[in-house]
Image 1 (cartoon, rainbow, N blue to C red):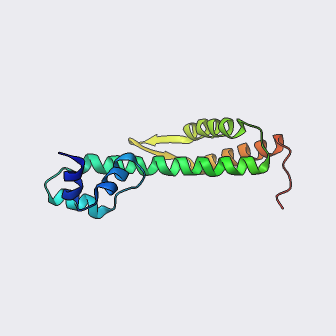
Image 2: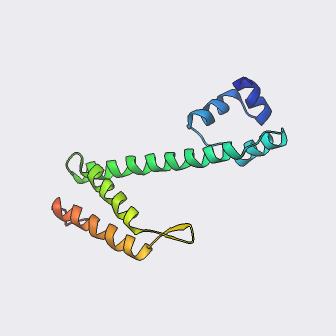
Image 3: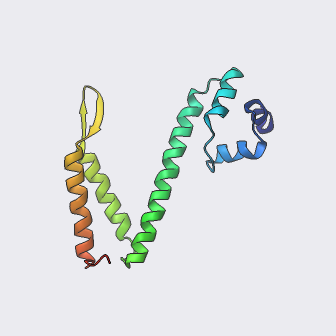
Length: 129
């Protein structure tokens, strides 16, 4: 099935279909509903949309933090190193009970706050006015 045919089936323009496929936009639920009504199993598409949304959020968060780091005058690589450390902390705070993963929120908050303060102290950033 062509991209144009798939877009027509979903009730969207071909450009919208391209944007959905490339991750530039996340399709609305009406898109998935139209495909489902057309007999298409949308479970894989919904999984993709969830992953795409998370990737877009993660990218936006990283870009925002990169800008903050630049504005604070931190050294190159500082953010990446701090995020790598935060990832390790998150893994350490991940708990699995009865096959359900969750975070020890108190421990996670305490350790992430300590990491942030360490970063600021190392960079000699003390005044936020």
